[in-house]
Amino acid sequence: MKLTRMRRIIAARMSESLRIGAQLTAVQEVDVSGISEVRNRVKGQFREAEGISLSYLPFFVRSLVEACLEFPQFNASIDESGTHVTYHDGVQVGIAVDTPRGLVVPVLRDVQGMSVPEIARGIAEAAAKVRGGRAGPDDLTGSTITVSNIGGAGSLTDTPIINYPEVAILGTGAVVRRPRAVLDSSGVERIEIRSVCSLPLTYDHRLIDGADAGRFLGVIRKRLEAADFAADLAGYGA
Image (tube, rainbow, N blue to C red):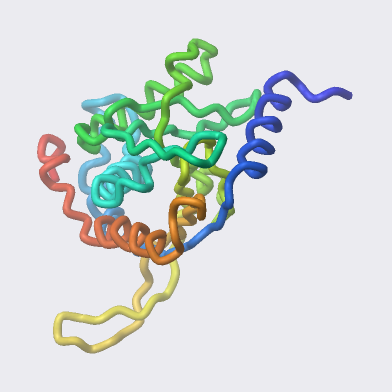
């Protein structure tokens, strides 16, 4: 049995990416208990107002974009010769969408100017367009960094392959409840059950060093753990 045309395209792109880039994956764990509390407060009003669920993914994307503004080398691309790098002004986020035909990556444009609700709407619209077979070339090209929601199928972590010619891709693992050591307000350590997930980041070592990958992930983690998205969600009872 021959591979479908879609599988052949995916196979060619993934093989090309691995052939060209020097890919490594760094992983950090993030405590998203604060995000979970925010979602629980607003998800009813959000669904009523927007007609879609508020998942964790828009929070991950918003935090990723903010980190890209601080570390522009992650929002970049390298040409096939490996001699020229382009640093992009806007952040165009590819969102890996699971479809019956295979993985498709529609693009959210200029996400640096979007709030969490706007990102959520954009993701929902892009996914519906792709799954409905209505996405055209303009919807699927021009991303500068990609997010893959590997936790959507229950995976805790993975090693995402870079969407060439980009230089980084962030995976978002399944959010699970785990016992973790935390410090209370008096500085005493105790064990609590927390909502946590893994954030695997695959990066191109030709441009990015491991220390910068760790710092980049650290910025995303701190932003998510601060869970300060009240301004984004003020209209939904946050």
